[in-house]
Amino acid sequence: MIVLGLTGSIGMGKSTTAKMFVEAGVPVHDSDAAVHRLYAGAATPLVEAAFPGTTVDGAVDRARLSSTVLGNPSAIKRLEQIVHPLVRADANAFVEDNRGRGSPLVVLDIPLLFETGGRNRVDKVVVVTAPADTQRARVLARPGMTAAKFAAILANQVPDAEKRRQADFIIDTGKGMAVARREVRRIIDTLTSKAEQNTAP
Image 1 (spheres, rainbow, N blue to C red):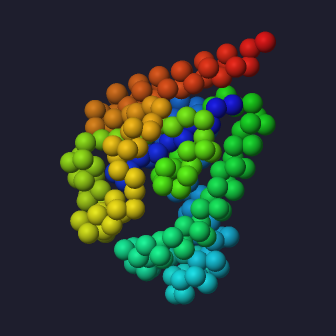
Image 2 (cartoon, rainbow, N blue to C red; image 1 turned 45 degrees about the vertical axis):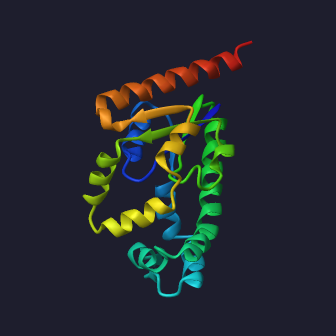
């Protein structure tokens, strides 16, 4: 089974691309969704202990947490030390479950793949990209987003050019949905044909 890492900087279209893999029948582990589950479960007491007042009714309040840690590198690092091991354990269980099912390919959707040393957890990496002006317009259109917040988020991410340099595959979502969908199909065909060759007698 091939484990494909899917990543990309904020606003590049990674979530939309992940849905394209799902639509094509490939199991996808969504790290953001895992964090949402953890923020309503196992991570809640750990986050509250580290950042008092950031949980409400037994769940992490993302807005409160964001205002507490954003722009504070030491706080972000402390939060990552809590959350990342829990997300990795969730992803590992997902991989092993699909390995047991005989899946030829799975995708780990990891927003901070390069930033968190996730390269060694996957066999191949696809980076989702888009022109900088397209990225900026997408992000600033999000509710509650500001130019300052966008800049702070980018400051904690490996630059897009460096991600593309390290990628095995690149999908440019700035070229439209149809092009991105074709690229997803091409990547799936390339990797599953290799998986079949590796298991051939």
